Figure 1 (cartoon, helix red, strand yellow):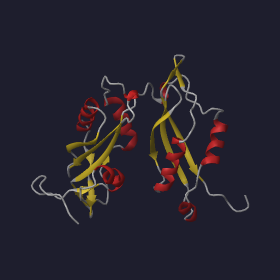
Figure 2 (cartoon, rainbow, N blue to C red; figure 1 turned 90 degrees about the vertical axis):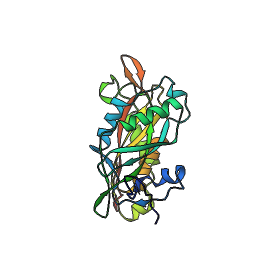
Figure 3 (cartoon, helix red, strand yellow; figure 1 turned 30 degrees about the horizontal axis):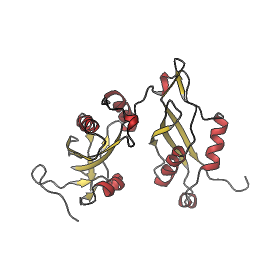
Figure 4 (cartoon, helix red, strand yellow; figure 1 turned 30 degrees about the vertical axis):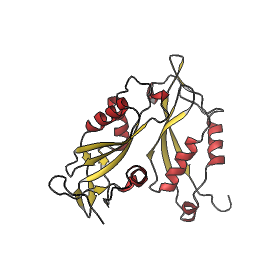
Length: 243
């Protein structure tokens, strides 16, 4: 396998294992050795989400006018967890791309990647979504609601959830926690798997079923529709014989 050399006097650069899709689509010519453990944001997804809410700035250009709201980046996480060599692989506008680079450069140290039990310098592929949120969940006067209520939501999931065949054969069960935004018009967006079951097809199916949902009734703040985060558990349970 080939490696990149030249960083910090000839270090080998490894690529994060969880970003193959992004790497192959936007950076196919780069050849790296895969790590055994990818770099991570200290504190996990929840802390990172809070960091985004607090620190990401929105340029004057309205994100709602853009077809895509995602900037795709690549950067290096050193053995010490520092971030450097930030590159925009696919951007939005110059203003949004500049903010994406500024935002990533402001990250606190990350937990570095590992290969063969040792920390290594690693390339990390990252998707930064721009979606202006009016309110986090705890501040809404009225939370978003699936049309028809909780019973209708449960029925929708039961009717449309497709249990991956391999997961069924391997008897894999569990709960996937999905967070998304219900916009002030009821549209679903900014879908994120906060906590999966450690088996990609189940996580991907939970993402799909949320993405394909019809419009919701939006949340309210001071009597007006507002874009609000909503967290939903998707539970996978195999049917028992005789039930």
